[in-house]
Image (cartoon, rainbow, N blue to C red; front, side, top):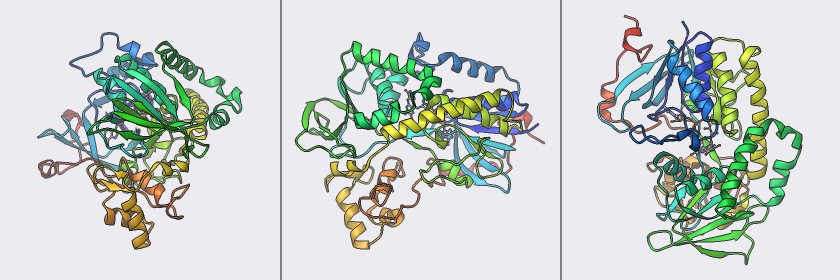
Length: 481
Ligand SMILES: Cc1cc2nc3c(=O)[nH]c(=O)nc-3n(C[C@H](O)[C@H](O)[C@H](O)COP(=O)(O)OP(=O)(O)OC[C@H]3O[C@@H](n4cnc5c(N)ncnc54)[C@H](O)[C@@H]3O)c2cc1C
């Protein structure tokens, strides 16, 4: 029986695991989180479950169906709290090194898997552009604020400003309101012109996104009920406070996201949540050798196959398209990984849903994609890398002194991106400052910053205790003798 390993149990991974199992494969589904659902269906901890969880999520029925189908399927093994910490390339496919147990815990169980087929569905994390004061306590990535609100029912502040770009700002504001926070405003960097061009062109194509319209209506209802203003063409360009956010400066932006002089105003707040889109989690795909596009997503064909034989990819690592796209891509990838025909049956239906959902993704990029004028919000003393406290002035200085626009050499000289988060927060920003699509310091496209052979830090003891022989299943009785 073909063994398919799926990494990531968000919408894409759940759909892939189910399709692969339905296609006759033995499936192992791994996720570093202690529950299923990924970012979209993030839950309260098992010891403090929400009483009416279905009210907190969209498409909860879909989640329930996937979870129950996987639990009932005899050929599926679900392994939560399973961190894939590295991937080694093999002639065909890959070997996965996995640690199972409490994150950072001692004595986690080590698994080494060499599946016949691998589906990567590792998702994305949210991206935040820097601005003066963004390292103050009280500034949160919108994703972190939402994780606290959804996963712990904790509000990050009493008076909160939400800012950035993209539809994601709306569920964040909604989650904050549900925890009792007062949301002072949602400030969307994209102006009405870009929003109109992105969302209103070819309106007939949106007919297939009726579910999204319902979701949007729910968020708008929340904002209206709580009298939260939504302001397009505005950004938080600075945060102020003595050891903690006390106020933010909000300014109007032009089409390129450059501040319009004279429009700045200060608003008192004790927290600000910022998000400017998403960055795919590419570590495993890069380790596997998968080809990436110029915009740095995993390149896949119509069957979600990557450029590497035996490896498929689905969800946000192939493009930011939302949960519907992730579900559809997962179903196609799982079918293909199990050796099935993606041109017939449920995979064909999923493929059509994928086409509609990808159109939605293109609109998000057209309307809310980052424009280069944001660099003008920076001052020389603005931290770009928060871990190493490397400032914008220092990065410019190093680039000028060394004459280099190479991310690697600027990283090594300035230490930007070398701290604990390993450039997850600042890597893309650094790349763009050194010569991205709208370069400010250089012209060449800077090389990748997403290569991290160790996906997460690993204890030496765990390395020493690694099993010598590959295991084909996390379930011991299924291992070959
Ligand atoms: C912080 C955040 C909040 C979001 N909130 C919303 C929202 O409120 N509403 C909305 O419509 N959309 C939201 N989105 C977007 C939405 O979550 C995505 O469209 C959807 O979840 C994508 O599904 P996915 O399966 O591709 O990835 P995800 O749902 O992100 O799932 C990826 C999974 O892979 C796992 N994983 C990654 N690397 C490893 C590894 N090395 N080892 C083991 N497991 C691994 C992760 O733990 C995660 O569970 C959010 C996205 C983010 C990043």
